[in-house]
Amino acid sequence: MSTEPSIFERIVAREIPADIVFENDRVIALRDIAPKAPVHLLVVPKTAQYANVTELAAGDPALLAEIVGVAQQLADQHSDGQYRLVFNTGPQAGQTVFHVHAHLLGGALPEGSLGLQ
Ligand code: 5GP
Image (cartoon, rainbow, N blue to C red; front, side, top):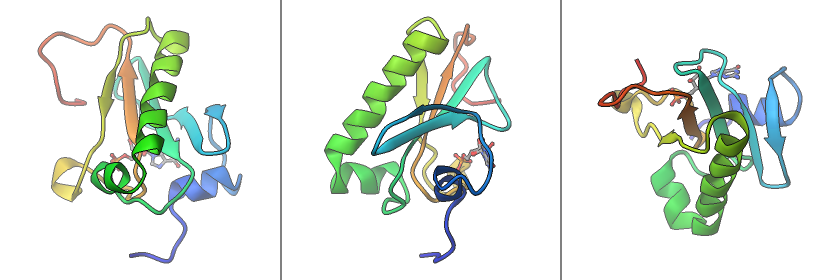
């Protein structure tokens, strides 16, 4: 496991700027720097303890449930209450940041498209 702080830890610490749309004591949400949908937010637990959603589900299921709840709240505010939630898990699935995060995608997504592109 890397000892370097993840990009999301650095955003939580305000070491690098981000467009933060939600924050509480356990969760932060921000606009993705390279959006792949009209609404593309990242919903992130502040702890860097969990590299992916499998680890989070096993280690702190209540925190995973909170991520989903925040996603719905943000979809209500930024989209039409409907959304796609994606957890890339592993490099071959497109994961680049190994600090678990949900991609919240919304805004008239085309039917039958599951990928981000
Ligand atoms: P992953 O590829 O791990 O599933 O998702 C990482 C996401 O973080 C990517 O969609 C990428 O665009 C986003 N990202 C990477 N660096 C930054 C950054 O510095 N700021 C923001 N807002 N998003 C970032």
